[in-house]
Picture: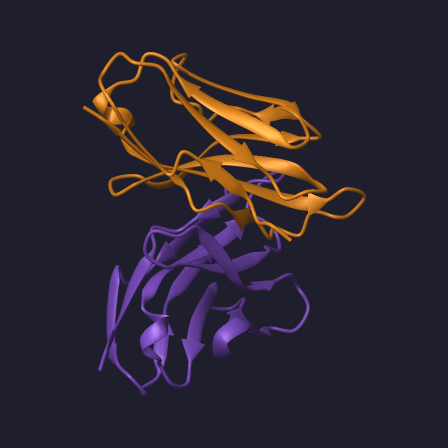
Length: 112
Length: 117
């Protein structure tokens, strides 16, 4: 079965400093992996996705993630945090059929 | 183009009452998903439809929950009777343009926040 583990429930950074949100996955086959973002009182929005093409994936708003098969990781990074990045981020792996398996989420706080 | 539209945005009801949540997917999408989000359990897939047909309802908690998709532009999630433990945010999402390939990108509505007293 497919699963994801988000290693941090909360991350706090200062504006202008790098962001690192960690995600490990488990999959019995070559997975598709995603990061979604949820701003307060909003629905989720796709940030980026990996589907077995380039291992470094670029997404919206300056975010990117690197697929590392040897480490079963798909960490999300951004060089410089902005106040508007404060949100909850979900690492997601594709499951059977059309099902997505969501991680527990990481709340990112950005301090001014 | 309008996104996924859900109504009501907020619902407060008393235990035992019937609750109906509504969703209008993005025009042209052929997959529709209902999710529930709580602090304790995170995001849970309740049911999803392809071409208006329920494909997997294994996430529906119990018989009090039912979902329908009478046509490509409308779906309902009904809880009858409601209980306090049903309090959550319910999201509808759509995906996959007709004739296209499923990519895993879901387009979410803004959710319906349900409080059962």
